[in-house]
Amino acid sequence: MLNFSPQQLLNKLSTVCTSKQQLWVAYSGGLDSHVLLYTVAQLQEQFPNLKAIHIHHGLHTQADNWAKHCQSICQNLNINLQIIKVKIDKKSRESLENCARIARYQAIKTVIAPNDVVLTAQHADDQAETLLLQLLRGSGVPGLAAMPTKAKLGQAWLIRPLLEYTRLQLHEYAQQVQLKWIEDSSNQDIRFARNFLRHKVMPNLRENWPQTSYVFARAAQHQAEADELMQDLAKIDWQTCQTKQFNQLQLTALGNLSTARQHNLLRFWLKKLNFPIPSTAQLQHICHDVLQSKLDRQPLVRWQGAEVRRYHNILYAMPNLPMIPNSSQYLDWKLPMSLQLPLGKLVAQQHQGKGIVIPENYLLKIGFRQGGEKIRLHGQQHTVKKLLQAKHILPWHRKFIPFIFLENQLIAIANVAIHDNFIAKQEQIAWDIKWKY
Image 1 (spheres, rainbow, N blue to C red):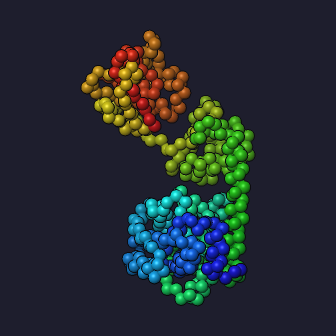
Image 2: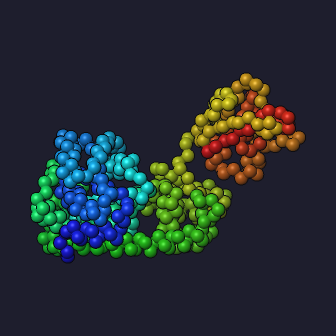
Image 3: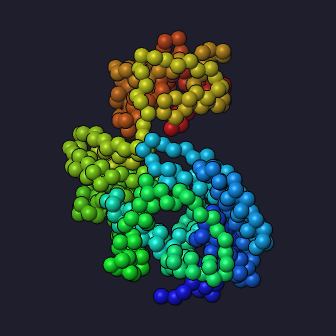
């Protein structure tokens, strides 16, 4: 167990970043971030590109004074400080802590450049608390891995170089070099889950197991290694199950995997698609209700931000679809303006000899499928239902396809067909209309 020192920090930083990178210290003014800022300032010969950033949440009556304190400290250390004010957008079911954290990182992303390094001051006690919180939430291996030393932050890097040290070690160093830091009174409020663990649970654990923080940090590291193995396995399974489309998986190959590997692959796949990860219960619904349904069914599992559907032998992931449009209502469309639709939009460009011939200054009507529609193609009447099937339009998109009417006549189905009487001849100026979704 090494005591904290600038040399120890230098040894750590040298393994995770280079002297050429721009370093930003996330500086709140509290003990931990002050120790980090002060120590990195002693290493400017090795890391000359150093700045600090302070996020002004405005949640505390002393927030303005804290910003002034941080500015004063940075001036004394000859470090440029950028102060950013943020507004916390708290949703009803989210904790204030989590909302502030999200706002903080979003603000940081606005000022950093690709390959910059953001240093934050989380330590071993923070890691232990995070592990406990994740356990209490019933998190899986990725959650129990807690906070990694190095992670991506947009196109930059987030590095936590103090995870090997306890708050007591940082406090002893701060006293040794006579630092003056901010004490946030809200850190004593045990209504916050992390504060409750910090002040009510962790002291009792340390009384019986003095090395609790180190043991929990080691457990988190074991989980991080297990998560790495799970990601490697998911990549192998994804290569077996993937199709040419990134948001699709082959159900036969997926069905050959064990349930545990199915869950692992689905989490990996959805994360790569930047979708929210479903709960354990939702994953079970996907594996049971969707994967095992009959081929003629179109099962759906939906959660906030994403949904998974099946069509034939393919599993599809997508953002939540909007409400199905009212098929009895019509939208007016005046070319050449684009038209926003419940799903996507219609766009039109003029071309010679390509597209739909529309009389000048006519107002088009846009409707949606009611059932039983027909359109004349190649000299014959065709049912729209069969056309959509032939074009392999996915069933859940068919209710959203825009039907284009001129004086109550169906003249085109966007991306699918144009009525014989309105197809442009070689010399005619026409409209090339696309449905983009």
